Length: 353
Image (cartoon, rainbow, N blue to C red; front, side, top):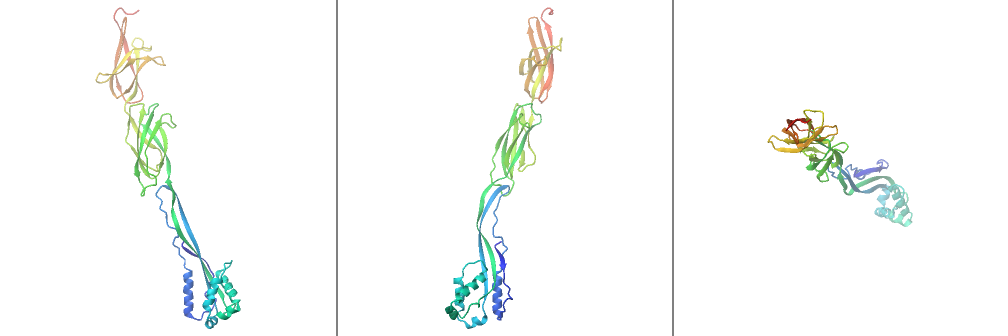
């Protein structure tokens, strides 16, 4: 507060005052010296939302002491040196560990110890008496200001969330700021960022980043490897946020079609043969030989097929005849789809022994 009375030792009834006008004047002076001012001494410092801030105020304190003294009325009425006495008190007053009125009385008595001063003023030692004191403390703001203002950060968890996750791979996302949602805005401007994701992270497809609170954000991402994923709509969120931020993406292809080739005469035995995969327009989209797998079977893998109907053809020509087979498969999006292509042998001469 701007002004507080910390001591008031005045009892208005301590001395008798015969002049009502003088008493009223004295009471008014005491009242003025006793005024409290509960107004805040320090002004506010404006801090924007979500700000880690430090402000500094420099405060000026000032003490004010009011001493009320009394002299006998008869002495003042007869004396011509009252003003000289008051001036002497003011000029001879010395600091000390006591109330101001006591120090003033001591100053008066010290001055009146001189007979010449008694004669010139008309007062003698002991005429000046202490009535009481009022001590006040005043506070005022010198300067104020912000010395530090930074953002309040939150660690945000992002999860790249495909509808059908691949067994392994990597991806990325782009984070952009959409402005502050508070008025006024927090202290630090937004900045975008690129986030990386991996199936090998713990947990998989998850990463974290520190973001300032008080802002709106937009993030979209996709799995880059393996190909065949499509980014979903951007996720909108604002900080602070509760829980992870999900970034959707959708698998649009079949990552792998595995075609097992078997012989009609020996379905359980391996059968390595040339395989072609043709789309609905009868265009070859993949071609290669089926090879022996760890389980002993032969298979040919076709990667990244868009959903639809495909024709599978197998053929191999030998000196004694040819192997061939045809099958149709309805490919659906997913990680792995398996089918079997059965081939038969057609001799060009006598049947093999």
